[in-house]
Image (cartoon, rainbow, N blue to C red; front, side, top):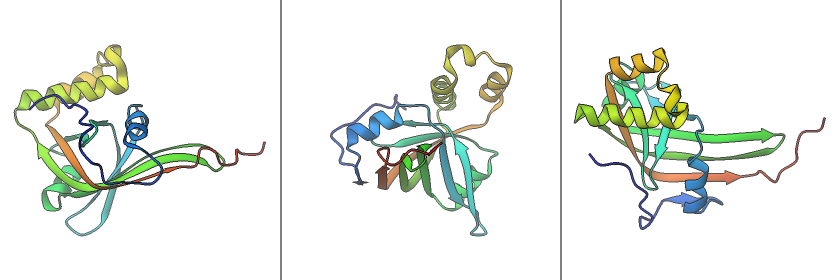
Length: 164
C-alpha cells in the first residue's frame, strides 16, 4: 500500500460552495470528524475520529475491536461530518457519504498509517506519550478508506457573530 497522495485529476462529487482546493485546505487542519455507521440491529452509531484526506479518499484509523469496525463488516456505508463553528451563525463544514474499504494488510503499513495520522494530531513529541505508544503498539489496526459518493459543503463564516 502506498502513501496517500493528492490526486487533483479526479472529479469529486462535490456540492455546495467549496472548490476541491478549499476542501483540501479545510481538511488539512487537524479537525475532529464524526464518523457514522449503522449497527447490525439498524441503530446509528456515531464516534469522533481523526482522519486524513488525500484529495480523493477520506482515511480513518480504526481498531478491529471497535463497534464501528464491526458495523462496517455488516454494512460498508458510512457518513462523516467535519465542521467548525466560529460562534453565532458562523460555521463551515463538509459531510461525506460513501463506501468503506477496510485495509489491515500489510500489518506494518496499517501501523505506519496510524503513526502518520497520530502525528498529524499529536505532533512528533506527542507520539512519545505512554497512552499513544500503547495505542500504536497494542492496537489491532485497520484503516478505513472511504470513497465519497457525495460531499456536501457549507460556508456560513460570514454570518452574524454572537452579541456580547
